[in-house]
Length: 304
Length: 320
Image 1 (spheres, each protein chain N blue to C red):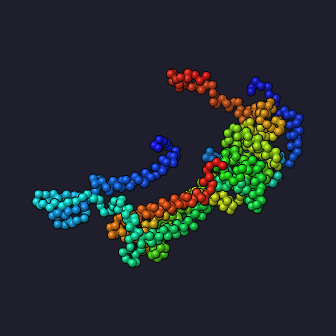
Image 2: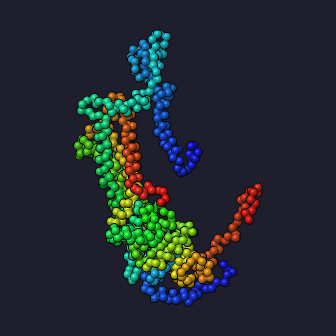
Image 3: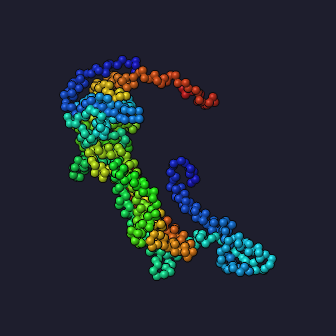
């Protein structure tokens, strides 16, 4: 990659520039103000998140990325209302968020489907909690299941589904409540590469067809650049916003773009932010002092 | 058939499993048969077949082998009528076939006195005592356990005292139970209750705590609050484990049965066992013990089968 002459990730084509200009005119969905989160640990106070500020626009797709320990999971849990910030606030459509609620759907990395409910009943859960009549929730649930392409499995139980299918049900279940924002915490982290890329395309399709803002946590740089309008890069110890990158890759996205100059440039920038070159020297692979452990009579003399 | 029998944490195939399960029952029976039927294994007694000149011997009498040998030696050469005998086991260890016969005859033998009960009536009494003790315990124990496992406040409110109380042996409350509840079934049910309840609360609360917290979090992000969290997530989430717990606890309740039935007026299967032991009908005693085992095991198998019907999502393990 180093030989390749890449454009700057800040360079945007007119089309992309125009899109961002229009996007920023949309109303703000989520607003995070001076968010601070401290944990008590045996070593004293640990600051997980320090002064986080950002906002997302309506129907925007934001990815959050950062090294391990940057507090990205803590951030999304605070947004979901599962944890309370030490200070600062989260506003959704201008209203302060307080505790978990159906206006913020969440998809977890572990499949959190209810094992005792069928796919349909899982999707109906939120609808029934919202007080819909059974017949109404039933009908709506089937629509959402159809949207994620699992109509054939409506009566199956979660353990009968593959990982990718489970996450599709989880997405349908979260969307059925018609949340203002869909929070996704490394939802495809446990899937194999092929399923993962298929799920990414699915998610984009869903996002295009539904009025929802998506905040997506990942540690996969390709995934972040491929999915996001903007990528929020955090740094660790303490977790702080490092940069909010506007992805210059035009929409609609397709796997062919993975090798386009804009894509590679953005990815390179993310790599620089997340794995700064000077830190790599801790483990110098060249100098690993390896002793040959293969017997002299081994049939395979050299692996090359 | 015998390959892979000792693979760590790997399931045997169906034939192997059935085979090994049968062996599990056969092994003790084989040991029992060896001790009973092979004359040179154990057999510390001698059953007199021919009293000879020993004045206090009589036919059919069981006597220690040493005493027998001593008497024979004392007579040696002086008398012609030397006593004869065959090796035998003490009266308290009947042979398998005797117990097998008793398993049938115990039910067909009329009680010695009119006021006494048939074996099946005694058994039915015992089953009722167990049933009520366990049901009453569960009515209180299960909800308290779930509350303690779900809300920290209830955990701190109930559990310290229960932790203390569960070390108190249930039979210790026997006299008290009789004083308060009379001499019939009530104090027996109370002992089963005391023996089961405190363990039950702790076991259930522990099971409740093992529920994956992310299921609760998912439910909260879907809009579930307080009571709906408890009834729509916590309870269905633990129900299969709860059911298994209750099956194990029911087994514990049975172990308190004998003590419970000795309290006040002796009744039920315990009355039958003590009565038969008094008559030295140890074949009947063993038969009664085996019947308890059979009832226990078959109830458990029945409940296991019922559980499979009740909890559909556990059953359908085949991919759709």
